[in-house]
Amino acid sequence: MGSGKTTVGRILAEAWGVGLRDTDHDVEAAAGRTISDIFVDDGEQAFRALERKAVADALAAHDGVLALGGGAVLDPETRDLLGGHRVVFLHVGLSDSVKRVGLGSARPLLLGNVRARVKALLDERLPVYREVATVTVDTDGRPAEDVARDVREAVERLERDEHDQHHEAQEDA
Ligand SMILES: Nc1ncnc2c1ncn2[C@@H]1O[C@H](COP(=O)(O)OP(=O)(O)OP(=O)(O)O)[C@@H](O)[C@H]1O
Ligand SMILES: O=C(O)C1=C[C@@H](O)[C@@H](O)[C@H](O)C1
Ligand SMILES: [Mg+2]
Image (cartoon, rainbow, N blue to C red; front, side):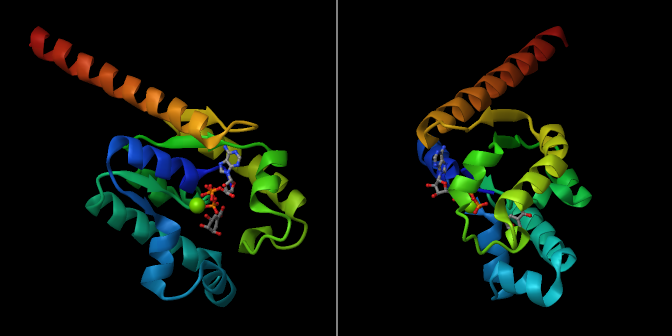
């Protein structure tokens, strides 16, 4: 949370001339309720199911940058949906994360002691984020523009490599 998905996503979408979609926004639009209300009324499991559907729908319909909810990759089926896509992990440490989300956060998973909750979530999730990511960029103490440039260079490098490998394979055939 607060790693810069929306901010960096917007810069990238503009640079590539594509659209930006955000599954948190899609879930709220589809449910006609806020994420906080969904968590309070129906619980996290119900939210993850709506989120999984939002990710599947977005991947099927949207050819651009997709910002995922911070916990989307915790769901194994959502992780499977991401196979074959470029997944960017914007790494943020405890102190920058807390600064960015604000101590008075309305996020359902941060209720209580924000710093302690962010630490627990980071500890628990880091291994999953690292496993799912094809590109990882550190965001601590760095402007969003610099982060976006690193993501762009890394993704474009991957695409060049894939393109070259594809041509080499064709030449060998
Ligand atoms: N690299 C950065 N350095 C400093 N502040 C940043 C950086 N990236 C984003 N921010 C600021 O941190 C806040 C959260 O950023 P943003 O909304 O982009 O994060 P997010 O990952 O989309 O969060 P969420 O979990 O709510 O979806 C915003 O106020 C944004 O301006
Ligand atoms: O980290 C999380 O689990 C969440 C992050 C937000 O993007 C929202 O998807 C929701 O508040 C849950
Ligand atoms: Mg966001």
